[in-house]
Length: 210
Image (cartoon, rainbow, N blue to C red; front, side, top):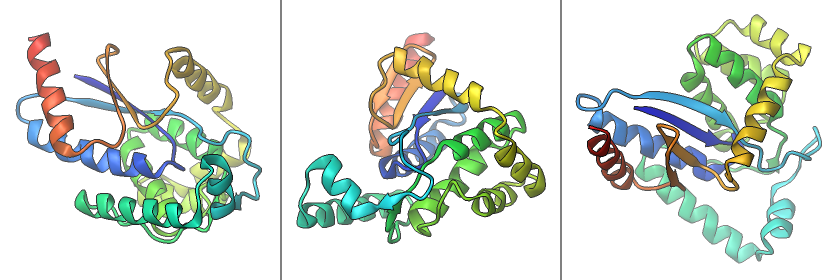
């Protein structure tokens, strides 16, 4: 089974969804071999390098009051804790394009999944800028990649065209929200679903394919 996990490092529900999906995959592992790939999506493609205050950005984007935002943050913390992800205080929203370029490179090295987790922790647990070269190099090292090579990828602008092409491809497929889980290029599961929902859907797809 091939799974494309379309997501953005800036998306908190992608952190929840990935951990939830992995719990489901652990239950399926003996029955359903899976190839998991990470595909790029930018929630805020025009975000400047210096980022933006998170409360101001979210209030404007979703027309939400401080009380509504606080309730959403608490719900995220609870959902994250249920699947083993810890949310910290994220005070700024950052541009994630360089993180996607590095993820593309990590995929060529066979360490994409490890880097994705490191980037999600840096952004959502530690509140760090996933576009900063030092943060990206450290995340690469945490993922078992060579940090100096990672820094060279970031500073060179390499893989920008590849990432843009992948983003355009999934936009043409109609992906407008993340996380979006695409199974065998045919089946779509959207949102940070509970593990049980992912497991049931994947079992049904596997049985149908059989």
